[in-house]
Image 1: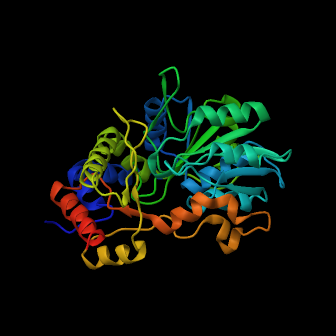
Image 2 (image 1 turned 180 degrees about the vertical axis):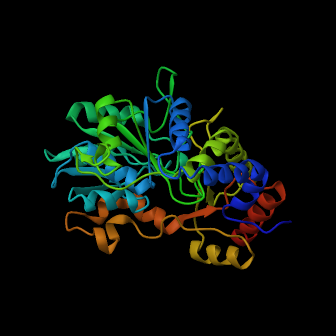
Amino acid sequence: MEKIQMVDLKGQYNKIQNQIDSKILEVVKSTAYINGPEVHNFQKELEDYLGVKHVIPCANGTDALQVAMMGLGLQPGDEVITADFTFAATVEVIALLHLTPVLVDVDPINFNISIEAIKKAITPKTKAIVPVHLFGKAVNMEAILEIAKEHNLYVIEDTAQAIGANYTYKDGSKQKVGTIGNVGTTSFFPSKNLGCYGDGGAIFTNDDELAHTLRGMVNHGMYERYYHDVVGVNSRLDSIQAAILRIKLQHLDEYNAARLNAAIKYNAAFSNEENIITPSICENCDCHVFHQYTLQVKNVDRNALHKHLLEKGIPNAIYYPVPLHSQKAYTDKRYQENDFKVTNQLVETVLSLPMHTELSNNQIEFITQTIINFINK
């Protein structure tokens, strides 16, 4: 059995090596490294894939969030509600822009932002909600949109972990996550479902005026060279990364299907284990693209299990070990521990297992049996 990887980027690359190598060399020979044809072609192809009017490529997923908030004209002191249980980039950009982060608890089943917690957190200063499609699972966007409409709030989707996932409306229609709110963002960090070989990101919107503003902002506020119409930043996706993403975009549905297949096999292996809570997988599932496969353990020393797996050569991770409201950078006297009951439980019980497109049946069997043996020893 091959060595188990948390994310097997090498194995994935080997399957498309000829395409990748040829395209990288083509870009190098062209010397069109910034805003070249590959960037514009990728933008159009991603717009077509997502069914969105505008994709604005940028340097990384964190920039995407920051520029999206800048483009909406949010002002210092405006409150922005987001989930306590997620990666720090989401709250980081809120603080960097001198907005006021308002962290709320998450749902105990899907780990996404709690709808009821959002409702309780709204004040006259609230201006936006940032739902994070955590681990690849689509947030309940209809409920979010209803709240936003009632309170006249912006919705900024953080789709860094969920590109390609569908949200299904009550009427049965579907829409790609990231294209539902006022603006959506994503990351092309190498380990993402659609990842480049460096840093990269993008912003999505169906709002023509907002898209125009964002396009200037990512390029020093310029629409014409050396004429700066808005305050901007330097945040551009380079041509080599765009070329790689064009190739990998062709395989994204295949990659997501492989991840779902691995998740189904994980769930089947753990189906009789009462001390393991597995992610829910709906019939004909397309709402979860399994950027991470994250389970919860009960009546088990999670940290000991984490260490045991590492000793057995099984990479695994705790996403996330400390809630954002407890991080030194984001502590606030407004926060009460009773408001974060689910998050505080999750940080003690979650464990993310290897999840990527190259997982073999033998590897999944070894991983799951090792966990089961530890729990039942």
